[in-house]
Image 1 (cartoon, rainbow, N blue to C red):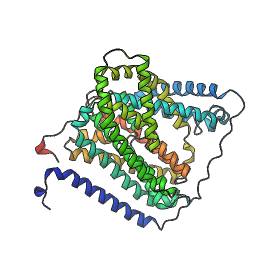
Image 2 (tube, rainbow, N blue to C red; image 1 turned 90 degrees about the vertical axis):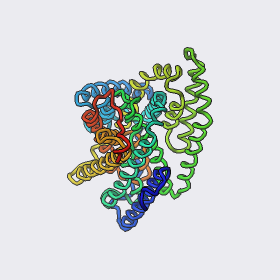
Image 3 (cartoon, one colour; image 1 turned 180 degrees about the vertical axis):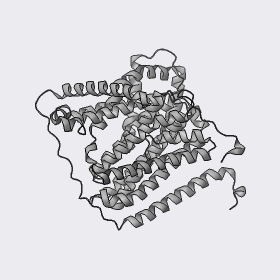
Image 4 (cartoon, helix red, strand yellow; image 1 turned 135 degrees about the vertical axis):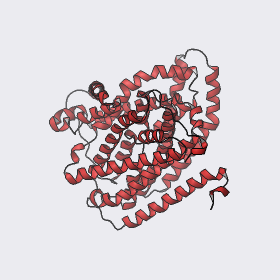
Length: 471
């Protein structure tokens, strides 16, 4: 059909419809070839919980771990700043160093003392609370006007940066399944999971990088953050599908999708007008009662999205995003929460995930070769998909490449998903470690690449080309 005869209002739906159909057919073809493959490993047995050794109480150990992760994380962040790395990289590496990969091999008694299962549970809850509050602050600083300005690019980038790495990851599963798959999952579950793991952008990590570089309010930062948020909601729906297939409960995906749509509709159509009216009328210092009311709302919103199945951080972020960013409430809440979350609680979240990673499981030339292939495929899918979508939306090659590198940021959301896959026996511990390495490497390359592509960290703006030269 000649494009001149297609009404302009149909162009975007037609393109996305063809993209969805093509992606679905491609994935079905991959599954067809993969059904005959046989995994090499037995099903993963659940780990036996570690007992806490005699000694200090759990409270003392949690506080001691916080001292170590905050102190070591800050030290590593300062050292890595010289090579343009964001603080999050130092904080994750601090967790890896304090975990079984380094300290556990050199001094296993210290690891057993610091982080037995009882202490890990307490630290995990504290870390989750920290990232929930942090994502609420990120939502408070989000400028809705800039999102509307770049709505077309946001939708295009979010979808393309999901579809491209998902299909590449599913295709890579044809090679990975006979080597690192387990007989606890069929190829369909394995391919779905690898595709989802490749397509996730670490929403909190990306937000932290943008915050550290003062880019959360720039056009580039808004498009990247909005695209990551949209894409990760889709990824959680796909992850629910994987869990449903693995547990023979496919109906769970329909609950996640329906619940997400209903919750978004309620928050945007009903809650937002009320919140905006209250925020514009409230022009005095925040009282303890008003602050408590906001915290209750944040926690309730986080509980709802966690209950639906798309993680609590999205509920906190959504509530923050519907509060006008230029209101006095948003300004004061940001001022009160920023230091406590970014200095104390958020490093605990990053370090906690690092302390659970077993890098030592990846050994031998074949394993490291597979790890390298995973990193390359993940990077090509994310950067290529986002770059192509941004370019077709009319942005320059420089801006499109910068946006692609931002979307290649991975980390904690992926680690949450990887832990789910490991617990279900869909992936082996070795493949889990490889995916964690991929997440760290792709995150470490984001900031140096962005520094080369952006004119400056403070004034990185998207520059749409004139309409007559758009691709």
